Image (cartoon, rainbow, N blue to C red; front, side, top):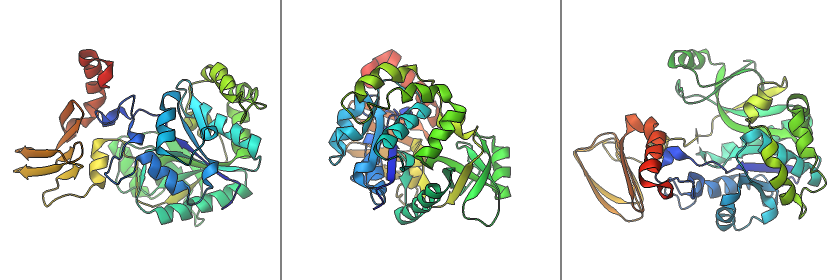
Length: 358
C-alpha cells in the first residue's frame, strides 16, 4: 500500500432523522443499520483499509464518542482520533486533519469521507479512489467524487461539470438542493452529478486553498504545528478549536476555489440519510415489506419497514407504507411520507419525555 495515502472519516454527526435508533449518546454511524453484522463506521473503515494503510486512517468525531470509536475499531490507536471539543462543521475539522497529516508526511494525499454512507460495489469504489489519489498526487487540484444520478432527487446537492471526454472533469458550479423542476433539468442534461461529500486532495493543495479562502482559520490552527501528534495536541485543540469559524468545507473552500475537479462514479452509493433511504437498500417481500433484526408477520400490509431489537416477534396488520422502529423502551410508528417530520418529533420527545430519550 502507498504510505502517502491517508483517510479522514467524518464520524461526529448525530443522525437525528434515524431516531429512535440514532441518539446523541449512540449515533447512527455506530449502529448496524442494515443488519450486516458491522456498524456503518466499521464498514467505512474496512472499505478504506483496502487502499489505505490502517494506521493512516484518522477518525474525526466528537469527544463524547471516543470510547465508542475505540471499542468498534480495535485496530485504531488514540493518536488516530481527532476529538472535536465542540461542533464547528467540516472546514475546521478537515484543516486540523490536514495539518496533523502534514506534520507526519508533507507529501500526504487524503480522502475525506463520511462514516455513515453505504457503498454497494466496493471494488469499483476502490478503483475510483485510487484514480483520484493518483491524479491529486500529480496536480494541484481539489477533487470530489460525483454520483451518477438515478433520479431528480431534491435531497442532494448537484455538481455541474464540463462534459468532455476526460475521465476527470472540471467543475463549473455547485448547486445546493434544487426544486424538483430544476433537478429534473439537471438530470436530463447529463452534465450534473450528485454531490456525495467525498473529497480527495493532496495536503499542500488543501492547505493552499485554506490560505486563499480561510486565512484566519489557517493562522489559528498553524499555531499548533509544533504540537500535532504529540502529547500536547489535545490541550491546544481544547483551547483553540472553538475559536474557529463554524463553516462547511463546501462553502468555505469548494465554492471559492478555481481548481475543483470531479470524478463521476457509480458504485451503488446511498447516503443513508433517512429511514426511506435505508428501506431502499433492504431486501423486501412480495409486497415490499422490509425487516431488520426482528421476525415479523405481515397481514394485509405492504410497503412497510420494521426495525426492532434482535429476534423480536412482531405482527403488523392493516398498515401500508409505514416506518415502525423499536429501540429499548421507545417505539416510533410513522407514515413514510411524513418522515421529514422526525426531527420535529425528536424535539417534541425531548420536551415531553426528557433528554435521555434523544
